[in-house]
Image (cartoon, rainbow, N blue to C red; front, side, top):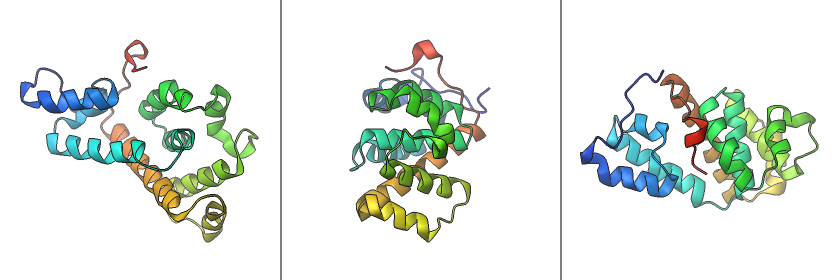
Length: 179
């Protein structure tokens, strides 16, 4: 059960912001319903994450791969359900690739560039300090801008997963998921 109330349409003073969330996310998802307990945090979160998700040079499949890998590592059902159920498939990942993200090192479904990004994501999530060898491998496939974007994306979704787990944000019912 979520540790703080889910805020929704009943808050008329938040109507403009709720309309913006719906426009950008398709609906008022539970994450934002929790964050609306602090409207300033909710607005900052939306701005930051909209930039990370929609205004970077990363291709959508790589972006979703990183998000799902962080979710797997952090045991975050909320993000895994939302991103695996709709975003990752739309971004071009196959169901097999999504399933293989739990043990990607033994899979042949990922390109060398994707493998470098996944290794980077694993190091950031598991041990924080990323070895130079992983940077060297990432640099073979991505320019400096993309490296920053991969790093910030992985960091942001580490934040997402930790907030969702700490506040026990429950996934929306499967029937109510955005397409």
